[in-house]
Image (cartoon, rainbow, N blue to C red; front, side):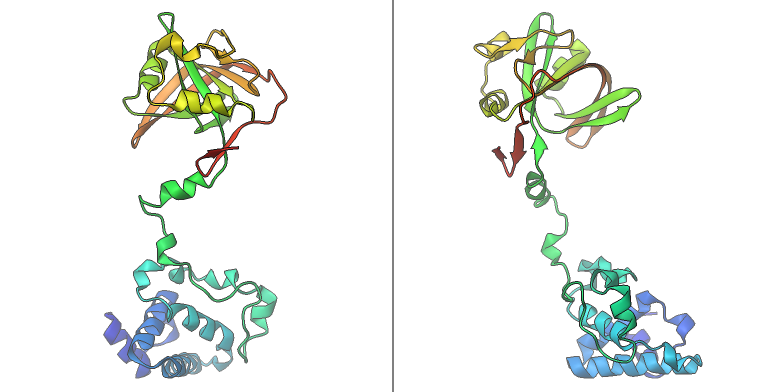
Length: 279
């Protein structure tokens, strides 16, 4: 049923409770708010819902606070498509405790948990704002290093995580077509040195696009050899892996490593990256 037909049927008393699920409630409340002055729209909504309950022989089922709270939220949406949460029947749980809502059957009660406000559509995920949001999530920082034909290669990473305890697997994300991804595949192994909070200069060094290639990357950097690749001295943790799998995913590959080395060479606090800053 089109919205105009639905609203006409609602106001004419031609809709019963079984024909008025939450989705239609939202559409009717929004349509009334678009057609009429706010107070008049709410009055018409209340009258229509009371009439539905009365025709069903359950006039006491009408709940004033629930009806008005939904109207307050729905009527503020300029575009229903921008607020999919309005179609979630549990939405009022964000604003009301169950005890407080139960007390509002016959009278209007303001919410006790948070004001009746909708999330702004600009806060919805878009390709433009996802990176800005992700930068606000603190992450540990590591140097991923590998060695192939006696030539080392390393880069700064912060997208690594434990995947499985048995067998021990970790993941790290590497850009498609990057030198690092190619080197890991050739070496079939890699090592992670989780940096300590006084090693931020190394994070900057190994992230630089114009850094030296090969062994020159490690010139002047205290490091040690492992079966999986070079590891940074005094890092807070070392993890060495054999390549388990590499799965393309968007503009990166998710690289899985089977852990063969796990050590904590120092008890320093780890370096964190937050909001594009090392801390």
